[in-house]
Length: 291
Length: 316
Image 1 (cartoon, rainbow over the protein chains, first blue to last red):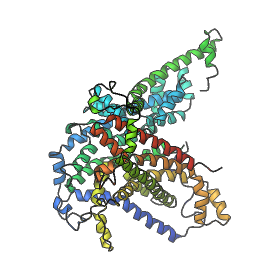
Image 2: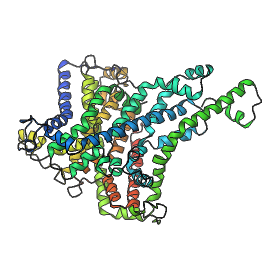
Image 3: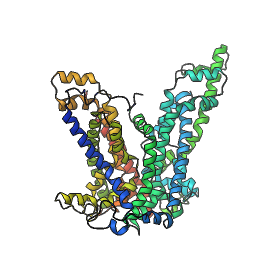
Image 4: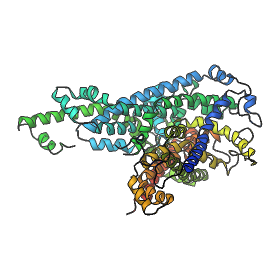
């Protein structure tokens, strides 16, 4: 895989063909900075407005910086609106879903990459074929299934449909394919069993792939909306996006400051997580995107 | 499957050959057993919660199943193509299909152009490149519900900062989400803002694979900067652009959270999408009908992918 986006670019500003002059490079920075501001300002505005009192959020013309600083919106979210519960629900679902995808995805990924068995091609084609099947297509029968299992409005109901996914298999298989077979041969000569080779010899070498898959899965679970909206029926089972969406169209629809504080609670943890691990993330985009 | 040639022989005949062959067939059996052991948990969950529902959805779309039939899903009546016929005769469905088509046909090119511009820009700077890339990518990791909440307030006619900025340069900003002709374009712009980071990262990786010698050769031949981009870089980027168009198109075909949070599908259904329609029908209890609509969406996704593969296929 020739996928390292970190690799030094072949074409750089200073020595680019055509002899880029300094002023055009400066203009490029200006344009890119304007673009960057456009990307960042909504988030800045979200955070800034979430610490304004309601009256100030709704003032005409709007204020940019808060004239009165208050944490009232957050206090209301956490004391009155049960955001701690939603936060925990989102976290529990995301953690379990991520663990499931890592474990089951690497198991099947290894079997597809390194073991010989009949039906291998069929299994791979079947899994890959669902890579682009959207949740919209399956949620109705899925709801019927989960209802009949008695799992609506429960954690298993929220989690089970997302516990395994094609992306995990695809990513892990790709990564295992890149590891040398000699490691397996050597371990077999040493008398290690097949499961042990998978678990103790090969799996520990897949750190970067596991990290990438883990982050991708965690984020998509954290941000998932349709399924939790359908399957969580009482407030105590809401995840953060469900709670935020329902509040924003319900009786709190016009409490701007409160909703923006809610958006902060949903967005800021993933931004922090993303900044901490972004190296793997960008790698993952390249890995899934380009071979 | 490098050992496939020896496999049939050792499987069909009792191992009577050389010790080496016997060892090999034993190993093969053990490998197959391990492989199925490793595959089984995944495949069970996958069959129940992914592959099964894909087919169940198709079957359901030919029945008159309603929410009252949940406990006896096999007792429903067949409705043949009734759901599909009703779907295409419903003015609202035609409206939401049109909205979704506009979202894709305008949103995908817009997102791609912005992402490509950002990627080319980043490819031509050295200092702070990682910083800029991070900034452009940031919205991608955030919840669409949350950014929809934020943008709903950004776009408020009186209290929103966007109209405030426009007012500062003397433009009276409209009621973006309240105007039936502006609401959908507003959502498209927001989607482009939210999603361009993914494509930028992919395009940037693609740009870095363009061989420098080619660009230099073109320059020697007298090609200006635009011509080098248009006739050297862009054709080489074709597979990358294709991939970007497909994944963005698939995503945009399903847009749902944006109208759910920002407009409730209004004004006058101007922002209601196919996904929103499916969700509504599901909420009304029309399961068979919702499944039919979801299959139409699925077919659209497959068709879009096929068309884009054709359109961006390398010219021979």
